[in-house]
Picture 1 (tube, protein in one colour):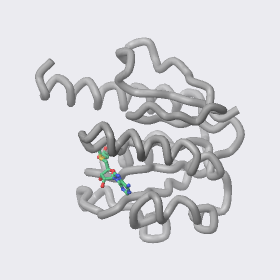
Picture 2 (cartoon, rainbow, N blue to C red):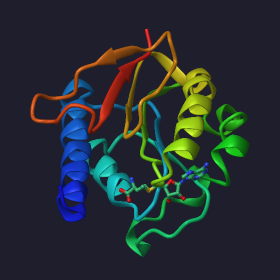
Picture 3 (cartoon, helix red, strand yellow):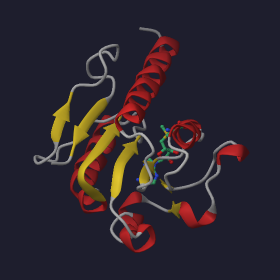
Picture 4 (cartoon, protein in one colour):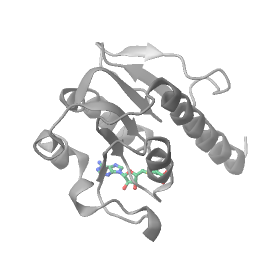
Length: 162
Ligand code: SAM
């Protein structure tokens, strides 16, 4: 598959998973966690899908489109390993779901981060919360959920905290 088609497939899978989740969580008002602001594309999509929910964004360095920069009070700036362990002080309530898109093209480094996030993220999530991610997570208590049928296997992942 060309790199162009790979990007299109990833973004399509991402959008399909988030759109599907919005059908499961209508009128959501509980916090959402966005790990990896990047260009701000999924952040922008999330704030349209979930207009009543506060979205807390974790990002090392803001480089998003100017129209997609979160308000300062909802931006947790720094490495995930520094911001996530104390994030509940800022967020104040367990999250309904986390969307984590953090792959950087280095499978070993990304895999280690996915392992770390699999346990570090858990205390920020409410029972029944969803985890939508571009990476395979390894929390043994989370239940793997099949993504929507049009999402190719292994392209995007969904989990649920019991
Ligand atoms: N979903 C975004 C979008 O739609 O534009 C793209 C996210 S981009 C693929 C991944 C982002 O995760 C990058 O901006 C990177 O800086 C951030 N990131 C990766 N590892 C991180 C870490 N350990 N701490 C903080 N941010 C990290």
